[in-house]
Structure formats: structure tokens, C-alpha cells
Image (cartoon, rainbow, N blue to C red):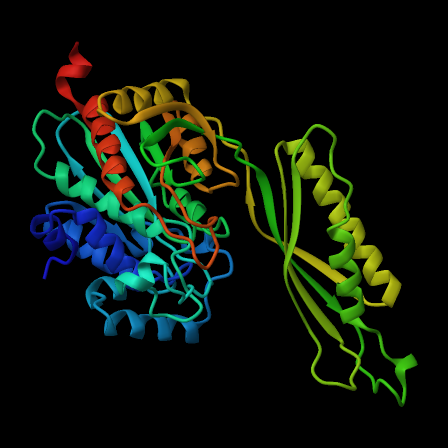
Length: 434
């Protein structure tokens, strides 16, 4: 069974068929066993050499891997719904990235990156939502492709399939299917495994971002500096009526921190953001909570703005703990830096778009957040190569990360065509010899 390669040869719209398959079975960070194993099997079937597991990711660089119990459940679920056992076995420990490549002779190494993971989100079941109405909505409660990564994987595979037997190319074409982009934890293990060390050019794209269908922005801008942080308050439990004075209330410390974190004064002339996305504390009605956990993030347009937000967050957490006589600890679980595209790479994207009739080229467009692919681009640039992140326009009925998010599936073919033209320009013999 060749899986996605069958869609490519048997469907008039293979990108859509693959995207819908993936949308139905979303998998979150470091648990993308079904997605990754089917991608690996399909790419090998069409002639690509494939690496996964420890060959594609450095285990020591993984932050907050899933528990053994969750991993076991996810593997079993993947196998029950079409995952490929021989590849899943190689991915043990959350090492789910897939690196596939084909060498077309001497020439540059070109990498294309596509993210695979979904979100911890319940997909809407209301009418009018295309995946629901079309029968391909998520079958997994609490998990959803709410950012378009299912479309990214579909584009990536179809580019690989279209070029598997291409003529007139010289060099190495490498596809990187990345796990755990959400939360910014998936790129570094791939970087530390050396996957980017010999790359001369890298290109990354994202669907949507409020750019309309039929448009492509050659350069994604506005990448934010950000940190995701786990905060823990430890107090002392006690009976809330019999001996309240003996307790030290961690919940109140967390509540004070959450409220005041959102009140941090912003930086003049710069966008800065803070969000407490989760707070858990307490056990029952009449026991003073002795532990409170927060999950939060700060973002800023600049390194200086980010440093200011982090410093204020640290002060607020410490002060909130002191108010209740509890202790506190902060742990940064991921950190993203801004991104700077290489002008040459942006020009390559622009030339690719201009070759496509009916597609409108936009010089630049804000991504509205961040992506740890920026770390991959930076690694290639540090080694003397070039890289660019661009936006594929796609009308969306709701913002990214919303339960009723969806993409315009017509944009998938456009994304595939842009990537194909990029590959042919960079690895094309005639173009490089001219």
C-alpha cells in the first residue's frame, strides 16, 4: 500500500484528498505517528531515501516529550487508523520528524520544510463548517488541525511526488516534515541532528494568515520574539475554616500573577503581548490549595521588547508568591526569535509566483505570530546559505487556532505550483548555467 502516492496518481485533486485524510486524524506535538509513518512509507514508495527517528532528530533536544502512557495510546491509535508499524517503531520517543531526499547529481542542497502537528482543540460540529459537512472533521476529541498544517503536509507530499522523476535538475532536494511546530519545540531537535548543516537554500510557507486566496506574499514579516513559560507556585495546605492561618494559598498567588501579567505596561511604538492560557490549582472545597500551575507566553516585535516583557513577568511572579508566602519557579519551555528572510530567496519566490497566471504577487505580509522554522532558516544563513518564509493566501472563515478554522482547499494547488517552480529554478541545470 503506497498510501498518499495512490491519492497522487488516482485523484484529480490529490492535495485535497490528502489534506482531508490528515484533517480527519489530527495528531499533536511529538505524537504524529500516523501522519509521519504514512508520509515516510509514501515517499519511500516513490523513490526518496527516508530518515526518521534518531537519524532525523536529536532526542536530547526534545522539550516536554509526551508521557510513555500517552505515547503508547497514540501509537495504538495510529496503527488502528492506517499508521505503518515499521516506521512507527523507528519513531519511538516522539522522534516523528521525517526527512526525505533525492539526489539529482551534483549541485546545491535545497530543503523545503512542512509542519505536521495539530492543536489541542475541539473542532466545531456545527453545520456550515466544511469539514463537518463534508465528513472529514476530526474524529479525535480535543485534537484538531486548526492552523492549516494538514494542508502544508499535503502540499509537501504532492511537490515531492511531482518531482520524483523530474528531468533537468542537478543537486539534492530534501523534504523536512517537522513535528511539534505548535509550541516551538520541533525545529531544534532536527537542527541538532545536523539535517540543516549542508543545506544551501531553504524555503518554508504557511497557508492563510488572513491573506486572501489567489495571492502569494513573497516574504512573511512580523515574526515575533516569544517565550512559552511554565510557572509553579508551591504553598501549604490547611483546613480552610479550622486553621486558615496555617495555610499558604498557592491558588491566590497564581490568580494574582495571572491578573497582573495581563496588566503589564506595553512598550511604546512596539507590539507586545502576554497570555496566561491555563491555570490549574486546588483539590476540593475546604482545603487551601498548596500548588498552582500556570502556562503563559510573552511576545514582542523586538529582542529588547521581549526582554522587557520577560523581566516584568519574572517580577510579577515573584511578587505574587511573596504576597501569599509561597515559593515560585518559572521554566521556559520554548523560545522563538525573529526571522529575517534572505533577499535572494525572496526574489526566487517572487519569480516563481510571476510564472503562474492568475496569481497575484504581494511583496510582503505579516505572519501574525511566529514559527520555529525561523531557527532552521537562521542555521542555513549562518552557514552561508539563503532562506525565505512566504505566505500562500487562503480565505479562512475563522482565525487560526479557532474551532471553526478551515482553509480554502483551492489554495493547495497554488502552493504546490509555487514550490515546484522554486525547485526548478534553484536545481534547474539550464537556469544555473545561464
